Length: 210
Image (tube, rainbow, N blue to C red):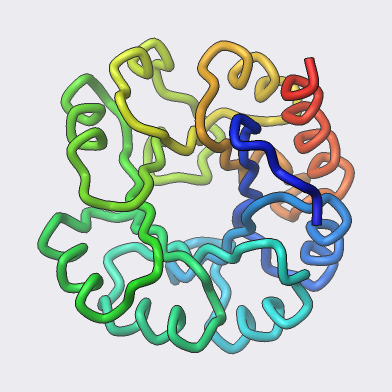
């Protein structure tokens, strides 16, 4: 596993669903990979499939389970079994939901926010989740929100939406997020593309070395 400096930008490759995706991730050594448990998503994986893929994942890479208004017990079960290491809430989950999940697990929680304006940034800053993720829309759309709103952030965050190998370097250089999260930006014809995955990771790390 690569040694990570405290100031180095973390990388999350999300929406992995095939063994070849995991093989590519093992080679690239991102900090996180994501399994999408939202059934309406074309990137959906069932718990059994995620368990099989997690067994192929190198131990130093953390797996994040992406949930959209799932029962907290279901997320907690996947955390307890080790299929995922972190829960990411990507729907309309509120503080009451986070409180319910906290009673079931002590594993980290990421809360995602669809950023439309200043009020969404304020909500993200006030979230009790361990980390927050800022995206445009419902995630996985490849669209960016108005990044100037990031000036208002007062806590570490994952930056998502509109990132790909061509845009992530400038985003990292300008905003220095805690982490970057990508899904559609590393796909070709709806499937993860190992070449684009490598180009994305290289672009982030190139800025980190500059």
